[in-house]
Amino acid sequence: MDKTREQFGRIYDQYIDKIYRFVYLKVSSEETAQDITSKVFIKGWEAYQKGVKNPGAFLYQVARNSVIDYYREKGRTNTVSSDLIDELPDSKKSIEENAIFAGDVNLVKTALLKLKKNYQDVLIWHYLDDMPISQIAENLNKKEGAVRVMLHRGLKDLKEIIQES
Amino acid sequence: MTKITETQLIDSLKGLKEIKPNKQWAVLLKSQILDCNTEKQVEFNSTDFVMVNKAGIAEIISRIFSQKKLAYASATLAFLVIGIFGFARYTMPGDMFYPVKRIAEQTQQTPLQIAYNRSEDLIKVVKENKTQNLSPAIIEYKASISDAVKNLSDSLAIAKEGDKSAVEEIINEVKKIQKNQKQLETLGVNIEDPEQISELDAALSFIVENQIADLEESTLTDSQQEILEKAKELYIQGEYSEALEEILQMAE
Image (cartoon, rainbow over all chains, first blue to last red; front, top):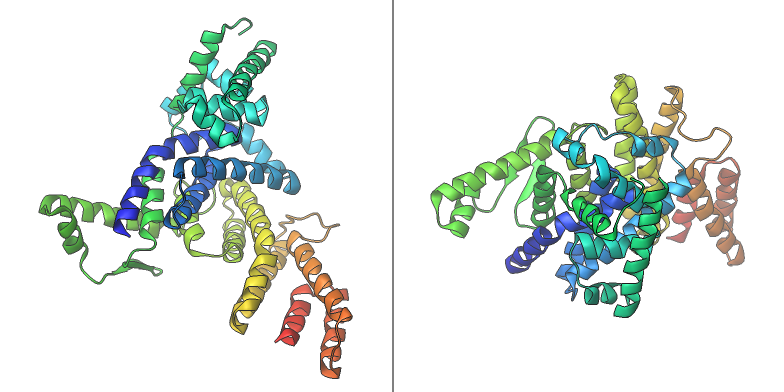
C-alpha cells in the first residue's frame, strides 16, 4: 500500500500543474479549477488503487468529463453571480500572477475559451503540456493524422478569434 | 493585436504554461488525498485537534527517513498541515483557506452533508453580516445543493440495499437542509425563484412520484395501502421528505 501511495504521489507531482492548468483554462476561475482538480485527483487515486493502466490518460479523461459536467450544471442552475465572478479580476492572485495574465498571453487565454472544446484540448495538450501527437490520438481515440488536422484548424481558428478581437 | 504569425501564436500559447496552481493548495491536496486512508486518524474538535496514532509521528517518520533532523522537520510540517486543516474548518466561502475545508469535506462527507454545511455557512454569513462572503457563500450553497440533488437518487438506492439507519440518515440530512432553507427565507435570503419549487424539493417530488406510481402498480396489504394513502396526502401537501419516509418504511 505504501508503495502504491508513493507511486501515486509521483504521478500527482507529475500531473498536478498540467491538470490544474487544463481545467483552469476551461473554467477561468481559480476556485472552480481547484475544486474540479481536487475531484479529478481523488478519483484518480481511487482508480489507481484499483489498478488503472494509464493514470495520466485517466486523469485527463476525468478532467475533461468534470469540466463538461461543470458547464452542464452551470447552465442548468444558471447562477448569475458565478458568471459575474468569472469575469471579475481574481483578487486572490499575486501581483506576479496577475502580471502573467497581462498582454498577449491574456488575449490568447480569452480567445482559447471561445474555441471549440476539442480544439482547446489538442492545443493545450500539445503546446502547453508537450504531449506527443501519438498520445493525444490515443486520448481522443483518433488517428494521428486527424489530430494533426485538429491542431492546424485549432491554431487557425484561434488566430482568427484573436485578429477579430 | 491585429496581425499575428503562427510562431507568435504558439509562443503566446506556450506563455500560458506559467499558469500554475497555488503551491500551498497543491501540497495540502496531495497530503489530504494520500493520507486519508492511512492508519493514522485525525480527529478535530472545536478547540484543537488530537492525533491518534498507533506509533508516534516522530517514530514513524524516523523509521521512514532514518534521520532525526528530517524526521522532526517532517513532523513539524505534518503538524502545520494538520493545523491548517483544523483552522480551515472555521473558514467561510470566499476566505483564503476555504478551499482546504472543501478538500477535507470532499474526502470525508457525502454530498448531502456538504450541502448542509454550505447552508450553515450561508446562515452564518448572513447573520454575521459578512458581506464579502455573501456572494461566494450563495454560489457554493447552490452548487452544493445541485451536487446533492444529482446524487440523491443513487444514495437512496444504495442506502435501501443497506440497513434502515442509512435511509433514515439521508432523510434526516434532507430535513436538516430544508429547515435551513426555511431559516434562510426568514432571514430574507431567497436563493430560489419563489414562483418555482426548490431544486431539492423537485428532486424529492420526482423520487416520491415514481415510488408512488410503482406502489400503485403493486399488490398491497391493507396496512400498506393505508401508508400509501398517507404518503400521497403528504405528497400533495408538498411534504416530500415525510412522504418518502412513509414509503420507505413500507418497503422494509
